Length: 258
Image 1 (cartoon, one colour):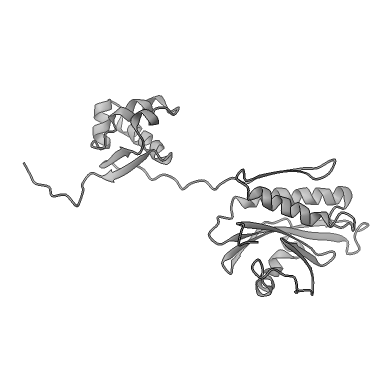
Image 2 (cartoon, rainbow, N blue to C red; image 1 turned 135 degrees about the vertical axis):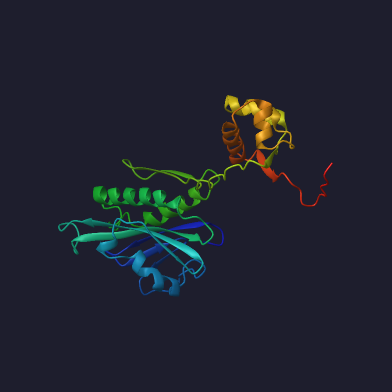
């Protein structure tokens, strides 16, 4: 449930009017076993049209932010007039995330999972067959546990012909702001430890000139390196978390002309 995990996969299918959500399975009209901590009736009523959608939203990734959570859904439709009584099979797989979680890394994971289930339905009626439908719950539970592990990936052998590989990448950090001319760079690690990394030659050259006193222009002069190149090197070091910037003036100090 969401009290333990950042994400909860769910599956909904319109051909049989059922909804499956971790850790309980419920049928339409039966609310006695719904986990209220995960998805209450009021929340589902407000978002159901984005979970069990019509054909116009099929094959689209949908994100709904409400009630302190993100609800991600990927409706998929399979048209086959001979196989299905309603001429098509519409299903959706989704994630429920806490509101403070960035949903962007989950979009490709959800898309990959949805297309895999669609292919299995086309090949062997994995979603609509009475014999294989109970396996969906165990599959979603395995995906949930795997993505919540330290490795943040999932490798599952679904059947003799299908292997599910999912990888959850962390969102990229925001761009490092440019270095101004009069900020003083300070190394956050000892110089010898910083130089152990495989830096660019120019970065290795200017690291000894970063002493916590020189600002950008002085570092460029003492290292005899172009100032814009020094600026770029300092930005790289700051991006990797081994460098911080302080103002050239300390407002707690008292400055006098000499």
